[in-house]
Amino acid sequence: MIVDSVLANAKAYLNKEVVDCSIAIEDGKIFKIGKETQMPNADEKVNLQKHLVLPGLIDAHVHLRDEEKAYKEDFYTGTAAAAAGGFTTVLDMPNNTPVTMSAAALKNRMKKAKRRVLVDVGFYSEFPTDIDQVSSIVNQGAVAFKLFMANQVGGLNIDDDQKLQEAFTKVGKTIPVAVHAEDKTLLAANIESMKKANRNDATAFLKAHSEEAEATAIKRLLKIGKETDVHFHFCHITSEEGLNAVVEAKKNGATVTCEVTPNHLLLSSADVPRFGQLLVMMPPLRSENHIEALWKGIANGSIDTLGSDHAPHSLSEKCASDVWDVKVGVPGLETTLPLMLTMVKKNRLTIAQIVHLLAEKPAEIFSLKDRGRLEQGKKADLTVVDYNQRFKIEAGKFKSKAKFSPFNDWEVQGKPVKTYVNGALVMENEEIIAKPGSGKIIRRNP
Ligand SMILES: [Zn+2]
Image (cartoon, helix red, strand yellow):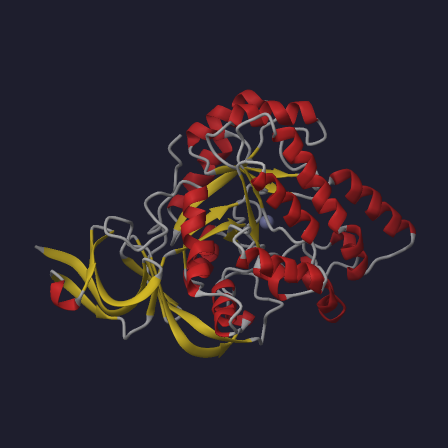
């Protein structure tokens, strides 16, 4: 038999250790992993020069924008950023224009993305106004619902506990519900009092988006979902109180998982006066004690996933004259892996934890059963890293349309040098090799 390709001379992460091996690929899948002498003949042989090979990374928190927000990012530039950053699968958030919150909107988005994406893309949906439409959204193949609690984004009234409970009952175990947990009422009151005091600075934004607002939202939702089978996946946990609430729910047997972002692990509220509005994000950056709690959560396994929360905006939107009008978030697809590999060098993280947080666990949570591990029969999605390469992050060179980053100029170590999706080389040494539409649209099978 002659397979499509053999990637020789790899140092691959298999069964919790890094092993010298070769990888044979046939028809987009991993055909065999073993010694070079055991490899079948291949149409193409590639020498990976002892680079580190990880299972293709999954970023479950990405805003690809496009449609009416294409000026910020589109399906091509967003997935090019993913491939450049070593991600082979991304899950797209629904706060688009129009908001993804119906089977029709979802179908339209899938159709538009299909011809343009470079990596595999799955889609979230917000909750529809009429919860009877929940099943049609699930049937259309949404990977998860997203519930934004800081203000009304979807159709379902976030102030109505009864309606929320009905929606969670309806969703049951079909797909997870990812949550942006900041309490709307508390936030509105805090913002109002800041505005009354004529506060219009980035620090006022931090104060308004208090730790209390996060923990309150988490606790409220856990209570509403208690009698249902719903799986809450809390996005971007930032505070010790918030994390404790999640840990407590896990102990009590609830199906709950949570995510943290590199922003909240590597930057603090002390950085805000220096960077100003660039660092405005939701939830905001916190003080050192919270950051330590998050690192501890990674170490003891209570944090399940890392997500970049890639949130591209135009620079003028980040520089709005009023802090309350600033668009929240920063791009993250092209910085997450190098930043996290650098933390491995600094002994705060292990390669095993990176693979767990960015591949194995997101694959499990979002039922992406054909990926997340390097194993025979899985999709040949591979992230190849030059673990020793030192470089400076240069936001001006991002594939993303958002060419700014709080990590600009940071010296990092560990660079994604090749990204394979479905067995095909998509990115090599910062160059995009694949054609638009080479990535696949993920439809979750209900
Ligand atoms: Zn987000």
